[in-house]
Image (tube, rainbow, N blue to C red; front, top):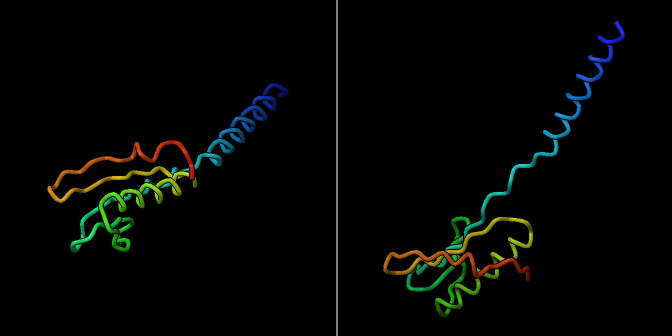
Length: 102
């Protein structure tokens, strides 16, 4: 009878440990995507389905997208920065975000 009680206690401890592991599992935050696009004749940053204000140049829009991505990355999010060229080519600029926070 004593062995049976010890087995029951051990089973409860395993269940408690498994529950604690499940409780600490956190879903990762979604990846934030910043696309530099030419829209209505102006360079803009497209993020979460919305266009930013116009930028005077492609470089200015890229700089803005990288800055926004760095802020999101500093907050713990995964980020992607892409340049969508007018000729249809897409360039991944995510490496320009780097590991450095603002």
